[in-house]
Image: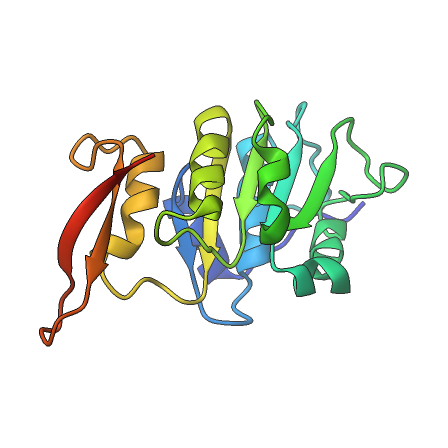
Length: 191
């Protein structure tokens, strides 16, 4: 079995990544493969080797993405480079791999001790996706992928909370735009 190879910029990104980070890159920059390589290396895989190095007991993998990416099988193509699949017959590991859309994120609130990749991050505001995201991140290791970073710091409040930031506390803010370039915080909403 051939080893997993990455471009230098992808390897550089993996070396900088940690649990709870946001991997930001342009469309088509290889965020999906880079995120899978992060998971692969985190659990014992080796990158840029001639032969494939197996992971040691990787946890279940959940990928929350857009409905289009789920339905077109884009993630299945990327998973194949790591000998993983949503089809247990094609996966060389004794774990499950699930790819689903943000519309179904509430189904995964009870998942524990897994690794979750949140693709095309949708955790802005205080709606059901954010609440589900926060419940999932309490029980699992995770990373976010985004080609569209936030416009201002308040867009990142759910990520701060998920990473245990004590400055933010356990509340989300809602804002109203005025004629100024920045939002005015009007109230906080407990989660």
